[in-house]
Image (tube, rainbow, N blue to C red; front, side):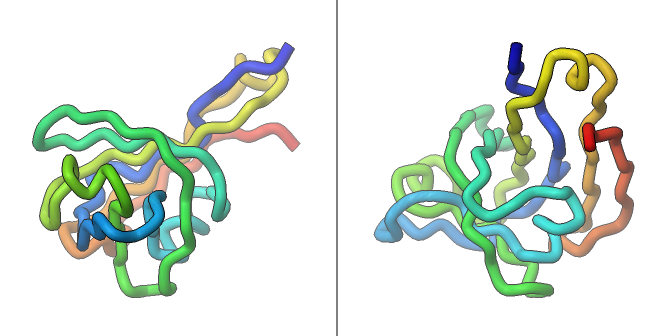
Length: 124
C-alpha cells in the first residue's frame, strides 16, 4: 500500500510576491527546492502562518539564489508579500518506508537564505 507523507518542510519562508494573474502554483528558489530534496511539479501544501490558510499546489522552479517564494494565481488573494509560510512537500511511498521516514526540514532567515538543514531519512 502507498501512503501520502511529508518528505520535506520549508520552515517559515517569507513570501516575496503574490501574482494573481499567473496561472497558479508556487514559485520557489531553486536553492531551497534542492536543499529540501523537492522537485519542480511536486505537490506541496502551504500554510500561511499569518492567517492559517492552507493551500495545495505544485512547485515551479524559481531563479537560483534569488530567495523567491511567490504564490501564483488564486492563492495570491490569501498570501501576501511578507507573510511567513510553511511549505510541506508530499510524496507517495510504500507503507514500510513511511514508518521509517522523517522529513527534511530547511530553516531560513527573513530573506529566505538557508540557516540550517535537518536531514530526514528517505527510501532509496
